Each structure stands twice: as structure tokens, then as C-alpha cells.
Amino acid sequence: MTLAVLSGSANALDPTDANRLEDELVTALHAAGAADVERLGDDPGRLRELSRRAHDAGERLLICAGDLVAHAGLLRILATEPGGRSTALVVADPAGDLRDDRGKLLPAAPGAGTVRYLGAVCLAPADLPTLDKVADRPDLFAALLEAGLVPVATPVRLLKAERVRTTAELTRARAELAAVDEDRALLRLAVKEKDDFFTTYAVSSWSPIVTRAAARLGLSPSAVTWLSVLLAVVSALAFWQASRPAMIAGGILLYLGFVLDCVDGQLARYTRTFGAFGGWLDTMADRAKEYAVYAGLAAGAERVGLPYAWPLAVTAILLQTVRHMTDTWYGALHDEAAARPRPQAAGGVGARLSAASNRVQGETGSAAYWLKRIVVFPIGERWALIAVLAMIFNGRVALAAVVAWGLLAFAYTGALRSLRSLSMRVGVLNTVDTARHRDDGPLVRYLLGRAGLPAPLAFAVLGAAAALALVVSLLTGWLDAPAKPALAIAALLVLAAGLPARARHDGPLDWLVPAALRAGEYLLVVAAGLSGSVPPPVVYLLLFTLALRHYDLTARMEKGAPAGRAVGAPIGWDGRVVLLTAFALAGAATAGEAFLAVVTGGSFLYNAIADWRAGGRTT
Image 1 (cartoon, rainbow, N blue to C red):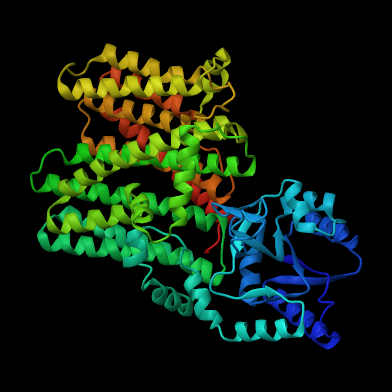
Image 2 (image 1 turned 180 degrees about the vertical axis):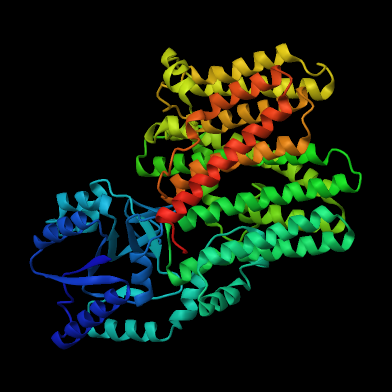
């Protein structure tokens, strides 16, 4: 439970009003989840003692100014940040001394800020040593920022909060609080403030009704997630049937499944029932549902005699997985740049793109803003496109549209993000367990990596390019299957990506290494399938299980979930490449891909179930 501290008091108020306000804050802090509320009074040195107490207990410490008038719901939001990060209460203010950068609070020059601090900050256990260093400073929050704290912003938005100095201000602030329907506001706040176009207008406009109903029924966010999975699976089965009524039903079910996919997050935010495992489950379910739908569309198109549907599904899953890897690591890179900024390249293209992007992001609701949100092809737009085209045309058309738009989005985001990352001049992959997120196995960890070569991205891209060239050669007939020598050479070039595994991955573009490694491995799976005439559904199944494994790695990082067990992990991408190539060269590519699918999928399921039983929650 969170430990709360009332810092200072409203000394300018009448003593009766000041005491009443303090009592109201204590009540609100208890309602926010604080098991214990300490009054700091005139002894700021006691804050260090309380900080150490919270740190030793592994608890958050919520520090609240004694002159704050705020809805209890805001303090609860502050105290229950889902990522377990430090967060501060702020209000929009063009003349503020803070800047909100992608949800992170950074100091700003006077008059150049976008938000203003409102006197309440909740510190995560990991940041309490920073508080210990500056606990005696009267300008506590500014001191924390100077010491390196980068808190998450908790904006006031639809609720009310203000610091008061006079009885008149106190009366006005209380009247403003009373004029707001707090529960209704909290329900609207559960909807993401900036979401995608389709989600904003076709889902979030009415999904809060479903969210409130789910809360009244006592459903957990994870229960809603499972209902969403069920609808997506039934939708995929309907697409497999491929009749016009079935395709229409599949499109409707897919849309309803996406509504529930939004509701589970809204329900978690509305009820403040978060869990690292629940966040992990939501991410994994999203990807599994989407890729199951791809399979249903392909199987349905094949069922009615439409060729090339499975190759399109294979391309779609490969493309989306590689894209998502770049999304994950670019987001991590951007957060690293915000937390530890370096001087950007003056006048460079990347710096100008960053400025333009930030300007467009600030123009919420404008045509440019929505175009920027749509062109990257987020999940809402993908599911809407699939549903509409499947209902009107067929599964092959829907898959072809997903591939075409996905390629456009990949080219757009890849080019712009690469230019922006060059201007940021920071690395991110070196800040985590690099070998784990590369998915290196023993061959790379203990043998190939000993070469210690530099340029990890160049080697990873070389392997992916070699595998892609082989796939194109087999598809165009330039090489005739089985083309075993070419497959062996491509596999060796893919494995060469292990030679710089021990080099520092701190280059401005090294955040692309995981995506390039995934591309190399997945393209080799496709090449081996073409070389050995493997049935496309088997190729797709292996790619599906590999995608789950790699999403598992990134989702655990993003959601703060435990690292999990290592059963099945030691084989690594390098071991899978060796086994796959050996099976293909032996003329048993189908058996090899099926075997790897069973091993990869089985180890993923075993680890997930074991972790669920050991530490999962139904939230």
C-alpha cells in the first residue's frame, strides 16, 4: 500500500479552514489507497526518514502539498500509475515551467513550458534514493528534477485540482469540485486521451457504456480480454467458412471484439485494477487475435479456390511482427532520449522532423494530426479495414490491403524514425539485457559472439537481406527449389549477425537490431518453406509461434512483467536457424518447421501458464 505524506500546510488560510482542508486531504489520500498518512508539519527532515521507510517496504511514497484542493479520484490515479513509475499531478499552462514530452515531465525555460506542477507527486520505490538526497530542499519537486527524476505526467483533464492561498480561493475551488460529476469524469478519463481515428470515433464514443456495465457486473479487465479473444476466434472461424453471411458475421464479430479490446483497458483505468501480468496478457492477446484472423482469412480464401491467400497471410504476419519490433524499440529510444537528452544535431533533418512531429501532435483534431495517426496503420485501422473488405469482398482482398498499407506504413515510419533517431544521439538496446532481447542462444553467446566484431546492425541487416534475396529468387523462378547451396549460404549470412553480439549496441540506429534479427530469421523460415515445398499453413504456424515468443520478450519489458522462466529459451534464434537449415538440407523441411513450431509454441505456453499460476492476477 502507498505511504502518503502531507507536506506543509495552508498557513495563509484561517486556522479553521486550514484544519478542515487538511482533514479532507487525509480522507482523500486514504481513499486513494494510502494505508498510512503522515503529517510532515514543520519538520522537513522527517521526510528522509519516511522515504527510507517506504523504500525498505518497497512501497510508493505519495507527497501532497497541504494547500491542495483536488478530487480524491485524481489522487487515486496518481497513486496507482500502472507502470509503477513516479508520477506528478500537473495542469495545462502555456506559461508553466514544465514540458510534457510524450507523457514525461521535463524542466522548461520560463514561459516555454506546457504544464504546471500542482503540488502532488507519487514516487516509485526505485526513485526514493533520489528523494533521500534532496529531502531537505524547500523546492522539493524542482530539486527532484535537478537530481534526475523524470516523472510521468498525471494531468487534471476533466477533474479539478488547485492550490489555494486564501479563503476565497478555497471556496471557489470547492465549488468547482462540487460542480463535477466525479464518477462520470473518471469514466471518460478511462478512455485514452489521444487514440487513433477509428478508435476515437467508432469505439470510444460509446465503449464507456460497456465499461461501466462491466464494472457493475464485477468483471475483471482480464475477463474482458478473454471475451475479446473468444469473439476474435469465432470471427476467424467465420472467415474460414467464407460464405457471404459468414464473412459479414465475421466482420461484425471482429468489430465487437475490438470494442472489448478497448474496454479491457478502460475498465482497468476506471477501476484502477492494474497488474503487470494483465498488461502482458492484453498485449499478447492483441497479437494472437490479429494473427488468428489472418489465418482464418487465408484458409477461407483457399476454401473457395482463391490462390495466393496464404502467401499474403505469411507476408502480413512477417511484416507486422517486424514493424511492431521497431515500434517497441523506437518508443524505448524516445523515452531514453527524453530522460537523458543530448544536444541534437543543429539544423539537421532529424531535428526538423522532430519539431514538425511535435507541432502536429499538438494540433489535436486537425487534418494533419489525424493523417499522421492514420498513415502509421494502427490496430484500429487494421481491424476496420479487414472487417469492411472481408464483408464486401473476400479474405484475399483483405489480406492484400493489409500488406499494401502495412508496407507503406513501414516505409514511412522507418525512414522518419531513423532520421529522428540520428538527431537524438542516444542508444537504448545497451541499457537492457541485450542478449535476451536479441534472443541469442548458446551458439552466439559462447561461440560466435566471441568474435567481438563491431556494427551489429550492419550484420543483422546483411542476414535479413540475404534471406530476402533468396525468397525473391525462389518466388520469381530465378532459382529452382530446393536450391540447397543458396539456402546454406543465406543461413550462414543470417548467423553472421551473431558475430557482433558482444559489441555495445549503443549506436543511434541500433534500436533496429531486434527487428532486423527477426526479419532475418522469419525470412529464412519462408525461404526454407519455399525450398522444401512446405505447406503454407505450416510455415504460417511456425511464424505465429515465433511471433508469440518475440512479443513475449518485448511485452514483459513494456509492461514491467517478470522476466519469466527460460524453458525453451536457450535454443535462441541461432539454434532455430541451424536446426531449420539442417532439416531443409536433409529434405525434411516440413518436418523441421512443424517440429520447431511445436517446440517454440509449447515452451511459450508452458512458460505463460507457469507464470500465470505463480504470479498472475485476474486484473
